[in-house]
Amino acid sequence: MYGVVALYVVGSAKEYTAGQGSDIDLIVHHRGTEDQRDDLLSWLKGWSSKLAAENYMRTGYKCDGLLDVHIVTDKDIAEKGSWATHIDSVYGKAKELQLPRRRKEDYE
Image 1 (cartoon, rainbow, N blue to C red):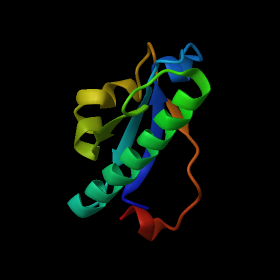
Image 2 (image 1 turned 180 degrees about the vertical axis):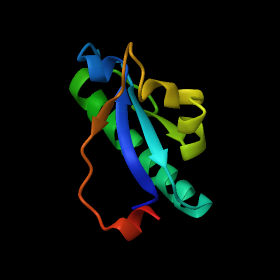
Image 3 (image 1 turned 45 degrees about the horizontal axis):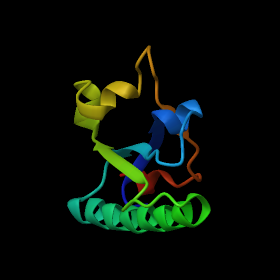
Image 4 (image 1 turned 90 degrees about the vertical axis):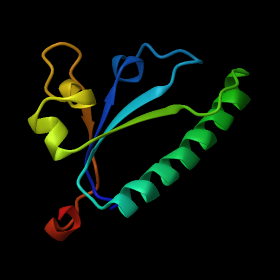
């Protein structure tokens, strides 16, 4: 869905050291169209705002959003560029999140 192949969390959320003002760093391995990417970012922005509102109600800490989303492509991963370096890093390796099982066609 939305061209997402894999989803990873890094940083303090992954390390269980996040505080009330911490964001959630997500790496999204994307293999879709530009339209899918735009739809995905819009959807994640909505969730980020919702999580920030929930966090504010629980902690009193106000922010615009809690998700810090980093899109990586097959090329980024192959070239070990951008945030893709965290996926196979020896130090601070990203944690892959389980996605629902899908059909092969969903990834193409």
